[in-house]
Image (cartoon, rainbow, N blue to C red; front, side, top):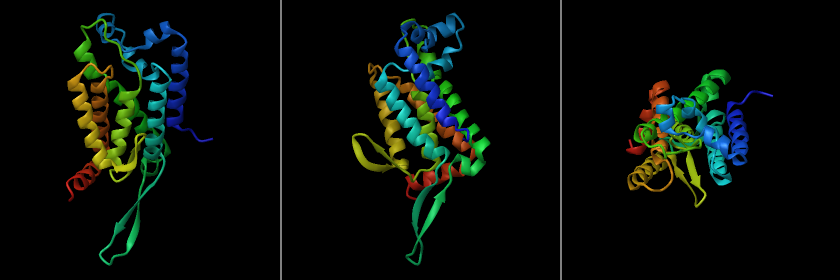
Length: 227
């Protein structure tokens, strides 16, 4: 059986989250608490919070988002129809990370996007709350956001469907709209959700793809501006 880093991440997240559901002390120890990172140098919390979730709904949403968007980004080949000048259509294949970089490096890139994206996502909440002893956050949402937006830049023509919107939305439209929503909710505040972490993760995912393949950014902009 071939190694799959996405499945490994899911097994770790689900297993540790279930442990945390039944052990409040364990959950508290693994949470992201910027105040303790600063005062007690508990740096492990910058990463450990990604593996635990508050409840089954929180875990399920992140796990499904990571699996469905991540698996396509990592492994699958998405097809896009293109109309030629002679009015015939051709089927263009857009490779995932493994098809582009090989099994090892493709999974390395995916792992870096997820782990470093999750850490980067925590930087804004850290700067905002390092002197607030009551602030706590948990979950892989920032890391998942990094994967989702990396996938959006990588394949902007794919379509993304939400639970309450069954019609697929082109990724190059979904991405900007989702970011606007996150900025609005962050500015509004008091939602109990770390929207700033979602934004941070998204920024990291975008920058990572631009770093390894700048042409993906050009493709996204051409689609977004109708070029």
